[in-house]
Length: 131
Image (cartoon, rainbow, N blue to C red; front, top):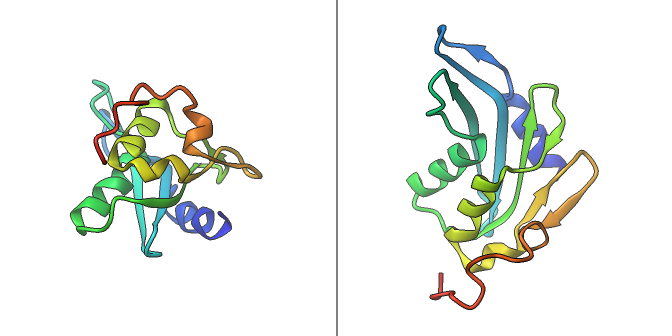
C-alpha cells in the first residue's frame, strides 16, 4: 500500500479550474495483477457531473487495454490521508471482474481490506456470469 499511497499523493493537488470545476482533491492509484500502475484524480463540478479519482484510474486502465483484475487500490485526499472508496467506486471495481473481490483496498492510513470485506452482501452473489 505504501508505494501506491506515495504515487497517489503526487497527484492529490487541488486545483480550481474555474468557478464551476475543481479537481484533484482526491487522487487514486491502482495496481493490476501484472504489476502495472494506473492513476486518476477527482473532478468536481458545480452541477455534480464530475467523477471520483478511482474512476479516473480505472479509465486509464481500460484505455491501456490492461487486465481488469486489480491487485490493490488506494485513494488519498489533499492532506495525503488514505480515504475509502465510495459505494459507486466499490461497485465499479466489483463489476470489472469477479476476481476483484480479493482486491486490497486502503481504507485509512494503516488499514487495507479486501473489496469483499467492504461489500459482504454484494447484490451479484449467485448471479456471476464469469466476469
